[in-house]
Image (cartoon, rainbow, N blue to C red):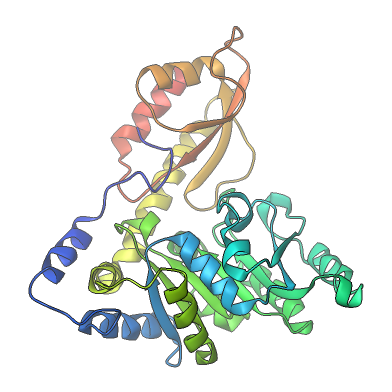
Length: 349
C-alpha cells in the first residue's frame, strides 16, 4: 500500500531490459550515441515536431531549471502558480540556474493559473523602468501539484496572454503522460499547437529509472541550452543509459500504458473513498493524485498496517478518532487492485 509518490514505485521491466541491452559493447559519449539519435526521432514523431531539439537529463529539477534559464534573463521574472513544483519543491534551483530571475506567483484556484489574474500580474511588472523586474516566461505545471489538469483550451488561453506580451512559455510535464491520457488529446495539441515553447517531458514518475526529456520547439535555443547544461553539470557522459530508458518508454506506447494504469488505479481509489461517509476531497482528482480527508481512526489503522502516504493536514496522533485528517495519495503504474481494495477496507474499518 504505497501511495506516497509515483517516485516510490518500481522501474518497468521493459525499461530494465533496455538498460541491460544498452550495457553491451561501446557507444560514443555525451549524446553522440545511436540510441540518442533514435530518441530524437521518436520524440519528434510523437510531438509532430520535426524541427524540435531534444536533450535528456536525469532529474525534473534540472529539466525545469535549465529550460527556464535558457528562456529567461536574470533581470526578469517567471510567472507561475504558488504551488508549482518550481516554487515549492526545487530549493530555489530555478533562481540559481537563471542567475537570479524572480518568480512571480499568480493566483491559481483549483491549482490552475487563472487567466485574469495572470494578465493583472503581467501588467503589474515593467512599471518601474530599470528599477523593477522585466517580464519573463510563463511556466505551467501539467498535471498540477494538486492533481488537477489544464484543458487544452486553458493552456491555449494562458499562452495567448503570455504571447501578447512577448513572453515565452514553458510546460512542466513531470506527469505529462498522465495529463495526456486524462485529456485524450495529442502531445502536439497540449504543447506547441497551444502555444508552448519548451517542455519538460517526464519519464521518472511513470516507470523509468531516472530520465527527463527537454524539448524546445524552436531550434534557436539549442546551443545556449547545451552550454547551460554542461556548465550546470547535467551533461551525462554515458548518455546512452538515459537514451535507453526514453527509447523504451516511447516504444509501443509504453509511456501511455503506464499512465493509463496509474490513472485507472487513482480512479478506483477515488471511487472507493467517495462511497465512504465522512470523506471529502480538496480537489476533484483528474489524473493520478488525490487530496482527500477522512477520520483519524482510519488513518491510524492504515499506518499500523504499514500503508505509506502523507498526512498533510492534521496530526496522526490525537484523541478524537472522528477528526478529519487530509491525505495526499499518488498512484503509479504498478498500483494493484488488491492493494487499493485493502487500503479502502482499512479506511472503512
